[in-house]
Length: 118
Image 1 (cartoon, one colour):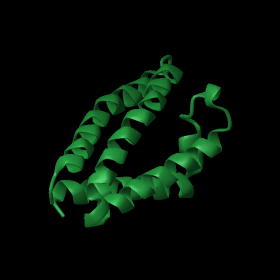
Image 2 (cartoon, one colour):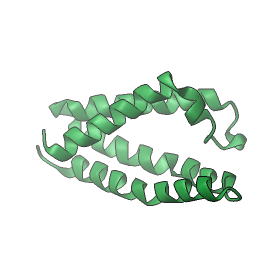
Image 3 (cartoon, one colour):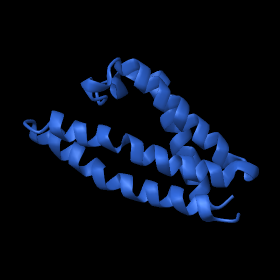
Image 4 (cartoon, helix red, strand yellow):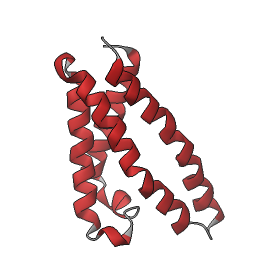
């Protein structure tokens, strides 16, 4: 397992666990039009844990990387919603805006894992 794969597996595993240990943090960034936030919090936590598990296994690593890249793109609208939600709060807006570009290396690393042969 490469360092990049280990880091991504750790990030997704920890984030997945956090969705269940602190769900209220994630509920707050679910766009209201999606409906019940706790459903989406748990669903995305399961998806993150699943992606981490796939990447941890040599036989499913490439699938895990591809699934992780899709997941990272899929949750990006929640990050945009968070910016809009906190737009009138300078500190909240700054934090939300700072998170947006952080998604790019996560998508990139996931896509690279999907094409790696390690």
